[in-house]
Length: 575
Image 1: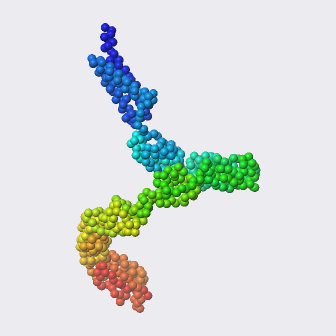
Image 2 (image 1 turned 60 degrees about the horizontal axis):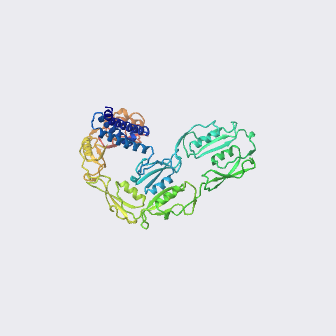
Image 3 (image 1 turned 30 degrees about the vertical axis):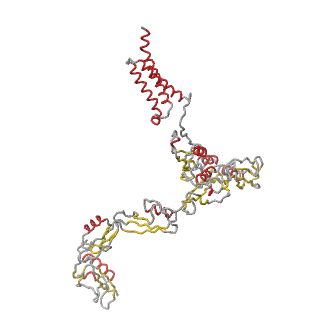
């Protein structure tokens, strides 16, 4: 009886054990990952095993097929245990190589690895305050990517702190000079000048500052520090060891102790640029500030001898430049005599010794000039100007090509262009628009027509004509002429049909005794009563009439007929 009962539960024991093992494995994977959402693929296998184990466990409680559940549960336990011990590195299975993290690692080490895998590298430099110069900031491929799937990797390499980064400089007045030095170093400032002068302020305290507020790291900032009272200066100073200090730190120490110095620069294979190599007065010796001058030898960094880049390919040049901590700029020109991609020249001669961070410009051949494909006229002109390719633009109307788009080039894509030839470019003016006659039409009619044709119409009011007011009597472009869409045209509108009337002059306007007063009174009177009629006043002498009166020989006088749009002259007596 006991033996039968034992047989009835043994399959349940195995299914329970399989469930516990799969649950343990799933829990282990969850605990050892940073984010479930980002690692859902990694969790898929343990989750799948757990779900299968759970299904087997549930069905084993009711099913009579005990042998099947025992075998299935046992296989699941073995399968799960195999994955478990592999993750614990108790055993190691052959795995496909994946990309490791190279952040903050040497670019040269990464380059060596990539070359061994025949992976092409595209290098880009980016400033960084946190990643040391020459080390990798990031790759465009994620860590864990299968190496076999990688053909090209874009690598962003640190170019050190950005010298153009903006800082907000606080007021340093009252700071100790040592605090200034710390601030300068922590903020990667590269152009700080610290001067010292005697003052009534405490020694080593900042008393002047050339700039505070916004400034770039590379901009000059001058700090003036107090030397204290001149009578308190120590004439004989014990020299300290300045070697391995930066020039900035060494110069401040010498200045604050009133020691005169001069600089001598030398290349050094082992010491970084602007680090003190040695000094003419040794540490522990006494320096008289009135008599002695100390010479500091400053490192120019490693002396790099420029090689012949024309014997290298672009990848070799790039590797050499990076390895030697230089900067590179590539320029391209067309040269029929040199194969595309070959290096034509370099801007620094072979054998020249340069310091680190020097910019080298390399000129590469683009081979024969071949016509390229362009998306716009601007893109073509930018290309042609860059490579000194001569071109000529002409414009014509086109019903099928939009205004400003290229209709055709004299060369087809990939055709070889003779360096002395000219590329002729036909540019569309858009669909030709025939200018209609606007004469005799109202402003609103004209505006509607302009809008429908795509013309830009402007209006001006002219003079009196045979047309009513606001009716067109002239246009700046002749009817029937052809223009492009968006062209401008000016329409001149009539002031109206002119009227003629008799000139009435109130006698009280001409008895002022002053020509200027009469002219002013008549001008106001005519503007009000004879709108659109132009009058010119001319001062004349008269033997019998008083000043301000209208001369009896005036071309225009009371009773004269005047018409709108015309000009009339009136003589005013001024003796």
